[in-house]
Length: 336
Image 1: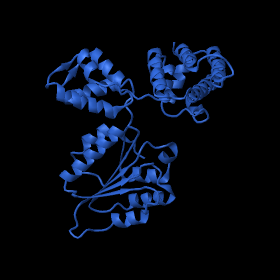
Image 2: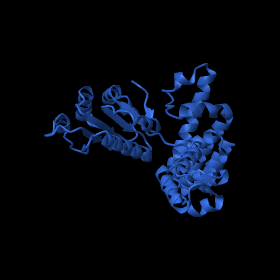
Image 3: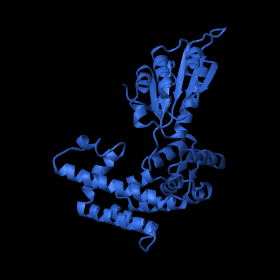
Image 4: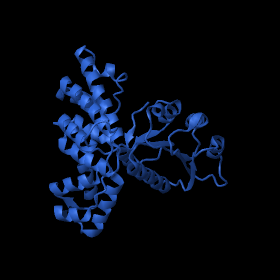
């Protein structure tokens, strides 16, 4: 199975004759939407004027889709066939239909299968493997906090706008985790300022709304990499968004236990690759956890686990105190 392209690399290929099958998936909605729009535009430019859209909701008839895909119109027009699977789970009948479609792609047709972020089960499914073998797969990956300033600067450059470093840092802070909002703010700035203008920090502060979106997974990356400042900002955002401290604490304690087990495994001569499955080190955790255990000694991790138990008692009302300040103090100490 060929590795997935980034959506940016896919866009660079669309000047060439289109392939018969494209699969778009990934967690970043904006990049997925932009890739789909670009494919539609390229298809129209290359003569695929008959567009047919199917959305696989509950009760969707997959056999009807296969029949429609292989039907030939009265004037044998080139066709763009879109198959949207909003939940990423086609089910048994859908999976079999997608395998069949991939093995027998309809002639004179560009087929696009649109999926959200896929879970591990979908990534390893027979239907996804079949689509990957016969088509071009592009993944809309999230733009993380480190890459976001470069992404913003690049998008501003496309609008012929420049930005100073301090203004860029403020911009990135205000839109973190919300790429669609970042694009909307960039489009707004392009209307406000002429080409060639360099945005100051005052102009950025006045124009860019604070639309950052935070989640607990970003928080894990922040404390594991030792970024105390980001830990504080993420916690403030999560608290303001109404995140429940009990869920946050559960995930934190689980991560600490994972680091303790990883430390023990490494001391026994095992590698990260050997324990990845048993410790559930998926995605970025494969890189983050080894960094964290090199920085945080086991006694500190054990003490942190005890503190998690104390905070749990606070949340349940069995001990005096406030949960959010205690969580903040614990995470800042782990990041320090």
